[in-house]
Length: 319
Image 1 (spheres, rainbow, N blue to C red):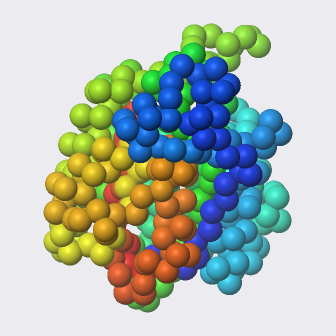
Image 2: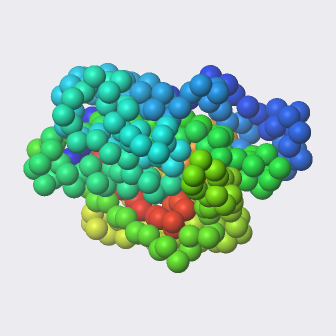
């Protein structure tokens, strides 16, 4: 028994914020500074009342519709997020309630920007074990809530959004291989080092990042995990039809493609108009590539992510 992606969907909040908009709001930067260093021109921000489960709900419905699956038929729901609605219940349970599903296994998965890749790998293993047959995997984030607008090195990078896929049991191969790793000794490179205790915020509630350290690590580890995943599937990295990397920085994306021997024409890039949407970035890019017709049946697509933890992983998928 195999696991196969049968539906893809995404959702972006209506509010588009350009680099010039950030400057107008008082961020000490410029469109040229941001675009040159990151490739980002704009991103979407959720409105004050929008939560991760709201974005996830819209993305999930679109994925279910494409797959021709009713929400009640799901037996597994995983939401990858670092910005849950509440401490508990999980965003996955909130989404389950809104979808009208009762009884499916539902839980959140926290691996930051690698969250969707982790969640896809977990869903694949549930399905291949035979315990579950139909899963909804979502990456949803409202990172705009945890940004320090005085820190131009980080606040210009992130956006909000959600992407989702339906994964079903199949007699033909779909998800060919998945790889997941972590190294907690590097937790300080990228974190939100705060918590709530006694009704007060303890520590720092904003995202903090050592940009240079993250860049160097990401370039190296994404190339390594790509090779590892392709090897597990018996596929040469340069023969992959499409690469969909975590959309963090155009320089990281370009370096990863070069190390894999792939031209940029075979790399899906959405960072310019999405920014870094953390766990939502890979499924958002996947949905855009699917709906534009670039990804065709039979093609092999490599999804890869790296995030705070540090976590990293990849999934090779055949459509």
